[in-house]
Image 1 (cartoon, rainbow, N blue to C red):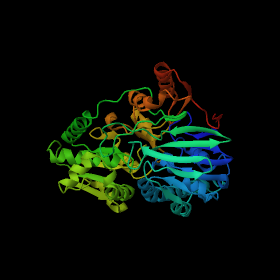
Image 2: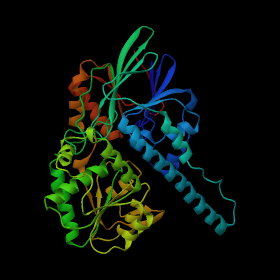
Image 3: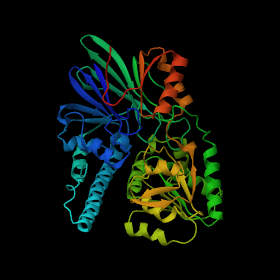
Length: 471
C-alpha cells in the first residue's frame, strides 16, 4: 500500500493523489492546476503516469481544481469508473464541458495571437497550440460516473472499501474513508477533500473526521482564523451601499459553483430586508445558470436556510432584481450600462471567462469596487488584484488598478486553522501520520506546528511526486 502525491502538493490547486493497493492504482481527485499559463498547460496536459493503468477515480467534489483534469485522463485512454456523490456527478456535467470549451477558446486565442505576430515578424514561429483537452474528451468522462450515496460503503476494488461523508464545502462535497486490506494487513485512510465551515449558507455543516490510521488533510487556511460568518451579510451590505453611493459598480469574481449561489442567497435576503439599495444584480455566466439548476435539483442536500425559503414558496436562487445572463451579447451590453449595478461572474481566480471583460472595463475607475470572495492562488490575476498591485495584466495588456479592492473573508468555503483542528480531533488519537496537501508553504507549516503541539502527531508535507508506504 502506497500513496504518491501528484497535485495540490505544496500548492493549492490541481488536487491529485495516487493510491496503490494490491497492485491496483486509484486516483483521489484529478484536478486542474492553476498558475502561470505555460506551467499550467504543461502540468495539466502531461500526466505523470499512464492513464490506462489507473483502475478507478475517487472524486471528492466538483470544483475544477479537483475534477477539471478528468478529460485529460479520457484523452489518454482512461475508461474506468469515477466514484462520487450524485450532486457532484450532476455538477461535473456542465462544469467539465465548460472547462473544455474554454480550453479550446484559449488555444484558438493563442494561435490567433501567434499568427498575427508571425505576419508582423515574417517568421515561422512556434507550432500551433493544442487545447489541453476538448469538449469531446469531456463528453467521454460523463458516462463513467458512478453515483454513491453518503455513508453507503462501496467495494471499488480488491482490498478497497470506499465510504463518504459530507465535507460541508460545497453542494455534493465529500470526505472519504478508505478501508484498505493487503497481504493480511488492514488499515483506514481518510482523505478530507476540502473541509467546509460550520454555518456556511446553503451547505450542511461538515461531518467530523472518522477514526483512521492515516489522514490526508487540506491546509488552505492553516495559518489563519476567519471572521465570524454573521459578519458577512453586514459587510456585504456596507460594501454595496458605499459603492452605489459614489455611483460605482461592484465586480465580483466568483466560482460558478458554490460561491455564486451563496452570494445570490445573501443578496436575496438583504433585498427582502431592505438593507441594500435598489440596484440591478447580474449573474453573468451560462455555467452558473446551469449549475444553479443542479442546486435546485438537489435542494434536499441544502441546509435550513434553503428549507425555509422553499417552505415560504420562494426560489432561494431567484428574485426580482436578479438577472441571469447567458447570451454573450447581453453580457457585452453591461459595458454600456450606466449607473450602479453588481455583477457576479467566473472565474473565481480571474483566470478566464467573462469576469476578465468586466475587470478590463471597470478596474481603472475609482468609483468601482472589486469584491474578492474566495481564495486566490499564487500567480493568478485574482491574487495580483488582492495584493493591490498598481498594474495588473488583463488579456496581456497592463491595466492600472484604481478600483477599490475588498475581500469578503467570511464567505470562505475552507475551514480555518481552528476549524481544521476541531474537525480532525475525533480521529487524532488513532492516527499514525497526517499528510498536509492543498496549501501554500506558510499555511502548511503553521498548521503542521499546531497539529504537533495539540496532538503530538507526525505531520508530513509531501512534495510533488513523493511517495510514502502505508503500514
